[in-house]
Every structure is written in structure tokens, then in C-alpha cells.
Length: 123
Image (cartoon, rainbow, N blue to C red; front, side, top):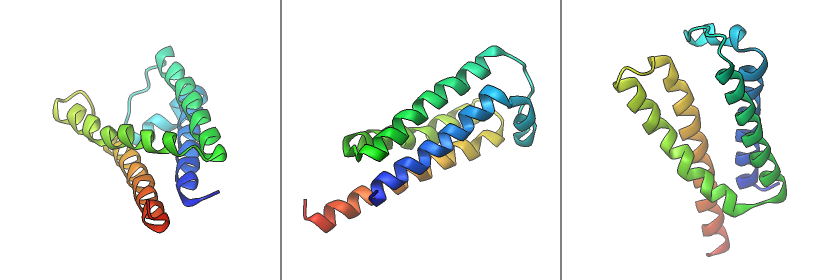
């Protein structure tokens, strides 16, 4: 697995872990981020959606899908902006910032590896 795929694979594992937590264990982990315990089914559904998304990340990493890697950068760079918007408008607590940071740094890692690969291969 090359470095680009590895960045996608690890982000897929992170996404899978977050999905499992939201689907099966939200009340155990939400308080760690000072988030309210709602008991709402949409939170569990969001966990399932994250697990589905992680499947795409992991499978694309294993198959070496570089186009997918490029496309993920766009949304992962947008995540910190969305989180800052939610916090600045009072719709989210500052504890959400960690999620935006992880997404943004993951996107930065993949972007850097794609640039490094292009320089290395002269394309």
C-alpha cells in the first residue's frame, strides 16, 4: 500500500471507529466531548452512515483508487470550515472543533502525499 492509500485507509479506520461509537455506544463517548446524551435514533443512523463511508475509504485505499483519494481532500478540507461556522453561530459547542481538525489534517496528509507522488513521478 502506497503512502496515499495509507492515508485514506487510516482515515477510513477513524471513520469506522466513529461510526461504531455513534451506532452502538453514543452514551458512553458523548460525555467525553461534553456533548448531550439525546437517545435520538438519528445519532445511531449517522453512525451507520459513517460506517458505510468508511467502507468506501478502506476499499478505495486497498484498491489504490487515486481519484477517490483526490476527491476526499475536497470534503475533508471543508470539514473544519463547517465546524467553525457551526461554533461561531452557536449551533455547536467548541468541543466539535476536534472533529474538524482531524478531518482537515487527514485531508492535508492525503494532499501532501499526492503532491509528493506527483513530484516523485514527474507528473
